[in-house]
Image (cartoon, rainbow, N blue to C red; front, side, top):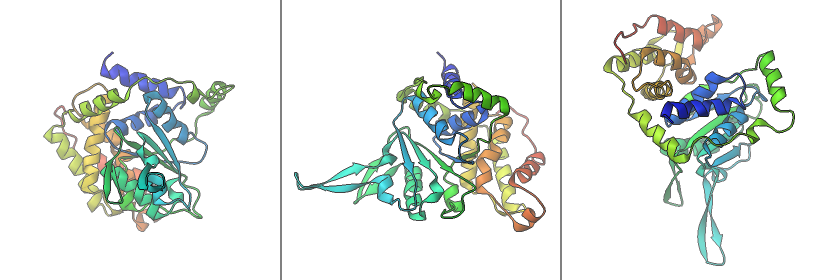
Amino acid sequence: MTQHSKIEELLTNMEKVIVGKRDTIELTVVALLAGGHVLLEDVPGVGKTMLVRALAKSLDLDFKRIQFTPDLLPSDVTGASVYNQKDMTFEFLPGPIFGNIVLADEINRTSPKTQSALLESMEERNITVDGQTMALKQPFFVMATQNPIEYEGTYSLPEAQLDRFLIKLKLGYPTEQEEIDMLGRTTSVHPVDQIQAVMTQEEVIELQQQVQQVHVSNSIKEYIVKLVHQTRNHPMLELGASPRASIALMRASKSYAFIQGRDYVVPDDVKWLLHDVLSHRLLVSSEARFEGRTVVSILEEITNKTRIPMERG
């Protein structure tokens, strides 16, 4: 089986659980293969948790879930050293961050201190407890969820922390027909409990390594930088995208090209990913909000006035 066939089998397997959301499933796999993480913001009950569970079961990876609450401590995420009276030594008990796929559920319901414990682990891919540094498992993928409608008792992620996520996604409500299909699939056993693994841990790591080899021409790199630079000078944006955003856009474009069966990036890859990679890194000005402008419309304007490179990626 070719690498492209393996990825297609993974996507099809996840579609057995998440109905009618092919693009969202694809973007989740893009982030995984690019070595990044996903922030999933949507209303309750649309399948956020099911999406990450379907991914974990399809890959037969170690899945951990952290339910974020106001009283959650950083050690509840990372783990802590506990005194063993029998051996008279301190023994480290690893926290849920030591999974391959970690669901950080309702991340905006916990304190900034606990949020930072997770986000620093995402960035460094290791944790330090009592002066000892420990590497996290590979592959390591975090999907954090948050509900946009619950403001009381929540702690919004600051822009500097949002920047740690490669992609921000929304599932949205299903269509009537998609919801009918969902009802038909959940009459007895939930589909997520029936799907089987279609890829091993070793195969995921191998795919991640192959994604890194995807070619990005100088013209594509220039195209990415021009798009990102315009967000920093746009009059309707208070905060533009950082150099980390340029790197994220290139990494995501390489992963998306690989999923499409190519070993090179084309401009359409960059354009298709632009909103999902940059939207959470930008801050619209109060004047723009008054005029009804959104991040979507501003990014569309930037894309339309930026010359597309003509040579193949």
